[in-house]
Image: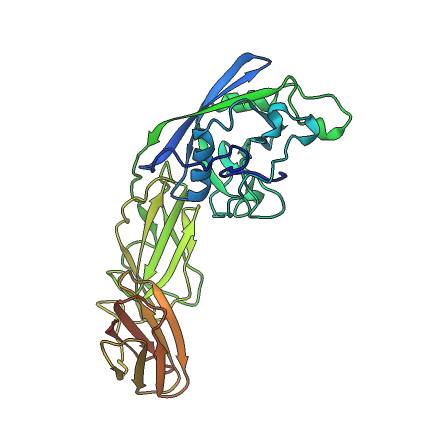
Length: 384
């Protein structure tokens, strides 16, 4: 996506620091009024996604609050691709500077995700520097898959997308130069106002495959976790664990825009538990119902496990945790109370020292797995 510099809070340009209009209870809504040659062209609305790209939403909201966008033009309109606007030089500057932005605009760091650049989505324009987005934005006219995870998507058009189509299909400047061939003539300008908030909380997805309590799955073959789509979903979060409460032993935590996720490498003779939640850009849904499946081996009841003897000291521990193992060549993993792995360590001998200096004070679970397949887990406390 071509663009020069762009976005956030201006200091020298307006001589003041910008602040967002308010905190977000969901997805802030904006009305974009457009005119061409002084005549009303049409109005469309957009909602932004603070739950996906908070910094870009806050920047846009800050600019709207000081009427930064009012009377700026859509300077790049490419049928089948995008319309783009937000360059301050389109207000009074020469056409040769349209698409540029002054250095007084503060750049916003990239917030790339797997959110899909589908028709009607709203995203940040930038230069080749991924952290150069400022005030310029573009609206996708088709699904531009090549932009996914390369440009920051942070909203979508919610009403009157036909106005965007009218803008892109409007007459353009005559050539030469050829760079003006995507510039509407007469100029199409915008006026943007914040009009409210979409506080809808999405519903939890319904899991479909593998069917709950599926057994005898081959752990050496690829496995896809699947669920039904949620209408307002932008992204989904997928959690896979060997712990039915998801407090420890998390194997995978994936974010995807699809309704399927590839399952991480699995052990044999093991129960796995998985769940999914929806992110609609403003809120997360509750987690879905938990599904479980079992890999080759014991297919009724819990998997058989041979436990490994482990001793730890001291507990509570401050900066270090001493670990005495029954067998050499074990992998040690530390999980927090939310089931997130926060440290991993391979121990070639039967003793090791784990550094806890970077961990906050809390209760943790140490999970140990030996080369022979024995496993065990033990809780410990990180103290002051």
